[in-house]
Length: 328
Image (cartoon, rainbow, N blue to C red; front, side, top):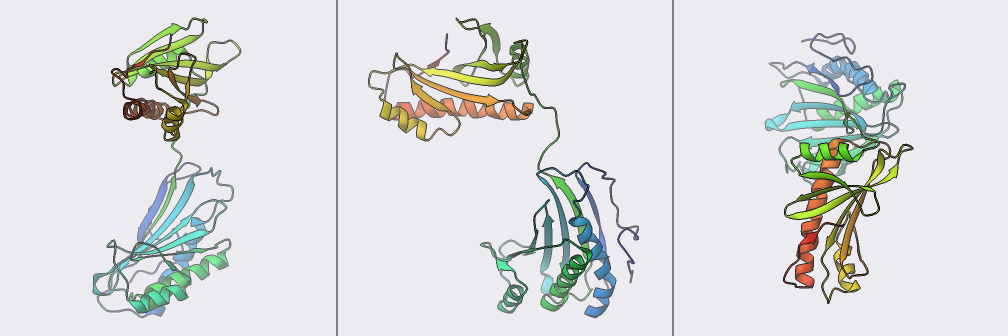
């Protein structure tokens, strides 16, 4: 039996350097598989200090240069009686309590009544999905980390009967929901043209009748303009993109129809102009910086919205032709 004295002492625990960048992880065995059942006290002696150390690392955000969306996750897994795979997951985010989840490896597995009652006494609440239980705990000191480690091991040995005849493994992972990458705080017409070409769209730089820059493009049989707002001091680059298309008017296109179409258009505004044409617009602010991937997704959303609005108009106000046209 291998006894681990403290976190990091065992060569099986491989951790990647992580001064400030995420993700990173450590993984290994808390307790090696034994041929014969082992007393719960022995399992606690072998694993207690190591788990407590892991939980301290899980919740250590001091001086780490964290940003919103960073998270740490600690997963302990073992196979207990009758082949039940048990997964204990503790998730930590800056300035939040630790979320602790107990789940069976097979989705939908329903635990017996006695175990459910034990979990409830530990403070867990059953989730809507079968076989998953949740609770929140606070770990802000070594003492609280040690107490949480004792609870984790008591849950394993007392409720689920873990006796060492299967390996007890762990993963300590660090992750982030924010993806690093290049961000655009401003764009010029030629910048946008190059982006559109790179995504497979046709794009032409021009000017409006008032002399402002515009990029003309189209997708899926629809034509649209991209105008520019919030110019920089030299007026060469801009901090906001304005997508515009026009749906040719119909004699019976009313404000109530526009309201009905607009009500279900999440990312666009719609209105009637003086010629009773339906105008659809969307603004994309670049304030703070946006990625090329985000702009591409906005463009795909825009294409879907043009198609959706066309279908709604056909349903509400039938007309021989309903092709959006470019704004001049």
